[in-house]
Image: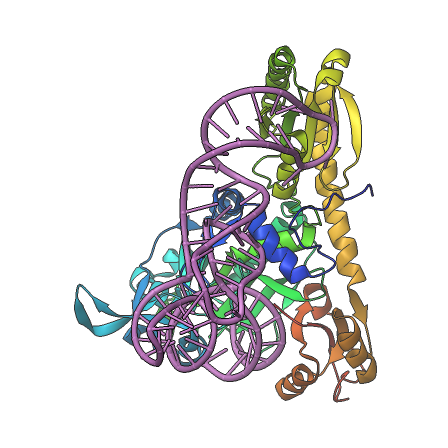
Amino acid sequence: MSKVFGKKGLTKKSENISDWYHDVVLRAGLAEYADVKGCMIIKPHGYALWEKTQSVLDGWFKEDGVQNCYFPVFIPMSAFQKEKEHVEGFSPELAVVTHAGGEELAEPLAVRPTSEIVITQKFSDWVQSHRDLPMKLNQWCNIVRWEKRTYPFLRTSEFLWQEGHTVHADKKDAMVMVMTALEWYSKFYRGYFAIAPYVGLKSQSEKFAGAEDTYSVEIVVPDGKALQSATSHYLADHFTKVFNVEYLDEEGNKKLAHQTSWGLSTRAIGGLIFVHGDDSGLVLPPAVAPQQVVIIGIAGKDQEMEEKVATYVGHIHKILKDAGVRVVSDIDFRKTLGFRINDWELKGVPLRIEVGGKELEAQNTTLVRRDTFAKHQTNTDLLSLEVPALLEIIQKDLYKKSEQSRNDLTTEVSTWDEFKSVMTDKKMFIRAPWCEDASCEATIKEETKAGTRCLELDRIQEVLSDTPCVHCGKPALHKWLFAQSY
RNA sequence: CGGGCUGUAGUGUAACGGUAGCACGAGACGUUUGGGACGUUUUAGUCCGGGUUCAAAUCCCGGCAGCCCGACCA
C-alpha cells in the first residue's frame, strides 16, 4: 500500500477508533448532532448512502412480491401491551406522547419502536382465506427507541429503517421468507457495502422480543467488536394468535397464520464507515458511492490554462457519464489543490482523476485510487472502458480486504482459559463449542463482556458429538460465535 | 438509567472571581495553486435556568447536550 495522507484534525483510526469514527462522521459530511439526545441530522452525503441502500433492497423486495405501505408512527399504549414478551422487551425504550392539541390525551400514544403490533392488527382484517396468503408488506420509515447510550448511526434515538412484515399459511412458507430476507441482507452487505459478514441464528436470549427465532447479519468491526447489522425473525404465531390472524384453508379449517418480520436500518452506514474508513477519512465502495469518480482540474496560476483544463475536464466528465459512471467535476481553481484533494478523500470518493497541463499535453489522465492511493496514467480514449473496470476492481478489493480482516479477527478456541485470554488481550470474534444454556451464556458475558453473536448458517446442520461447552463443560452440539458488541 | 470527564464565535482553543483573547473558518479585495497558500480588512462567542458576590466563562445547585465506563439495545 502507498502512503496514507493523514488529515488535519482527524484522529488516526489506529490510535483511537472511537474518536476517529466521530471525526469521520462529521468531517466527511455524513451527519451532525441534533439538539435532542441521540438524534442525528443526516446530511446529503450520508443520506445519499441511505437512498442507495433503499433503492437496491426495495428492488429486490418488489421482485419477490413484497408491497410497500405506510403505518402510523403512533401506537395506542393498550394495543402495544398485548404481546407480553414484546412489551417487556421494548417498554424500557419507548417514547410516549401524553399531550397533544394542548390537552392531556385520554390514552397515551407510544411512538413506534417497531410495527409488529399495528401491522398484525390489520393482518387480522385482511387475511381471511388461504388465498390471501402469503401477504408481504414493507415500510420505509423512522422509528424511535430511547437508548440509554447513543452513538452516531450505530445507535440513535430515532433511526430510519425498513421493516418487512409477512404472513404465511405455515411455518415452512414463513421460514422460506425469513431466509430470503436474510439472504437479501447478506447479499447487500457483500455485494454493495463490500463487507464480509457472519450470518446466522441468534441464541434464545438474544432473539427479538416476541420472536420464535431470530437470524442476523453480524459485521466484524476492525476493533474486534460485533455490529448486528440486519435481522430476520420467524415470529411463528406469537402475534397472530394475540390478534386472531386466522384463515380458512382449502378444507375450510380455521388456522393461525405464521408470521415473519425483518429489518435493516441506518446503522448499516455506521458499519460501512467502520469497516472501510482509514486515516484519510471515509472510503466508499464504488457500488454505493454517491460519486464514484471525482475529476480534479489543475491549472496552475494561468487563466488561459484554467479554461483549457475546464474544457478538458468537461470532455472527460461526458465520457464517463456516458459510460454510466457517477461522476463529479471539481474545477474550483480558487482553492488550492491540496485542499481539494483532502476534501474528496475525506468524503471517500473511490477514484480521483487528476487533469492538468501535463495530462492535457499528453491527452491522458492521472487516476488515483482512494483505497490504496495507487496512481497511474491512462489515455483519455481508454477511460470509458478502464474506469468502470477499475471501479469493479476496487469494489472486489475492498471486499477481499474486509473478508481478510474478518478472518484475521476470528479465532477458534476450545478451553475457557484460552477464551478468557483472547477476550481480554485482543477483543475479537471467538468460535467455540457452547451448550446453548442461557445461564451459561450469561456467566460468559459477565466474565468477558462477550456474548453469543450467532450460530453460523452453515454450521446449524453440523452437529458435534463428544464436545464439551467451552465454559461449563456440558455437551455442546454446535460451535457458536462470541464477541463483544456495539 | 448509574459512575467519570466535558460544555467559551461555524470549528479548535485561551482568560487568578475583575477589559472575553488567539488560530482556523466565513465575506470582500489583491497575490497564489501538481498534496490542506499568503497579505489587508470585515464577521461572529461564554449551553439553559437559578444562586453566591460590589463583580461569574470562572464558585454552588438544577437542567440539557457530548464523550468514556457499566446495565439495555438495530
